[in-house]
Image (cartoon, rainbow, N blue to C red):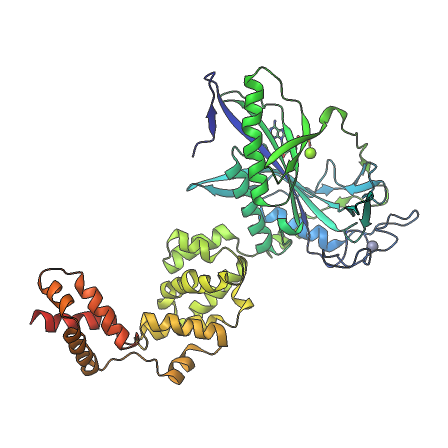
Length: 493
Ligand code: ADP
Ligand code: MG
Ligand code: ZN
């Protein structure tokens, strides 16, 4: 993988990228009040109360579930959970900020350090994490234009929702690495069950900090922060736009101004929004309405013990335990639910059928799930692990041919009926009666003199055509190897 750019001047540059990622936590209620966590499709301003509307005189109460989820996220990423943590007030005036300040964490967050493994072009490496802190989300401004005037509407459903912010070190060097990091992060958060981390739905929001420097230079270049990206693709495109833009500026003798830029999806470009020099001073101070935290290491360890097996560990175990190749193990561990469905099917089928079960999941089952959407799971269909286990066994026992088994899966997908029941009801059992195969082979030979002549003339490939004809006659219910053997027996005689 090349992450360096050589320019006309001969200088070789490398990009340096750090990400700031906000993720909505899947808590039942908001961060400091009892309001239901609001979803995007809810009627505006229906999940609000005096606390999350920022009324004077109200007091926040810490959501213990949100603290636990943040610590779980940190533990999954190998962060340290410091013995002390506190909330701070971040002051800034903006219409979507109900109180005029946001309760966040400044210098003593819940999680410090940590790393997340990514893989780009077959190379695995750990990206270093700086910290994870907990804060409250803002309301949402909906900008409107009715043709006469432009105006903004305010939806406070999101205001006060629990939001976790993860900050990486400046430790990535390409758009591909940033994309891989966000994907791995989403996957891990979903495994742990603390966040859906869905960028398209706003459950995960990312700012990318990008700078460039000559290769070999220790000191970091001046960074630009890019905002407003709502898909993995957008983050990657924005970075791919920024890197050559910054290199060209430096090459033409200009200096990079530290600024915030917005990403424009229509063009894939970034545009200046404001320079950092005029950025507001947040005047952080410890939140006076909330007590600081003392974290008991024993509680942290108890929490760590509740973590599920994480994607990388599970993938490596699948390779070891079931003898799967890396790509297949990766595919089967993409989601925790999918991995669990696979293992349940192996348990039902018997571990000697693990590889066959894996092929079903990574092949035809994946094909069917894809027809329902990129993130569909087995539980979204009428299929269960028992269906896949039965299919694998039917094929292994030679009760059905591979071709019939695929057909049975499609029928099961539509009806939900179990494979054995489908096979029996439709008379799909494999023909093992060699007499029947003999008869069809002879008919096929008689009906296809050209192919027979080709085969006898030395064209081995002609047998494939004849086997196909036998299979067609027998509606896929003969074993292809037996058909080929039978044909050869007659042809070579
Ligand atoms: P700020 O105070 O501007 O928010 P921070 O030092 O807190 O800057 O870093 C914010 C994010 O920017 C982090 O993800 C960090 O890794 C990244 N970052 C910091 N300096 C650079 C740089 N020179 N190039 C690229 N990313 C950087
Ligand atoms: Mg920042
Ligand atoms: Zn509320």
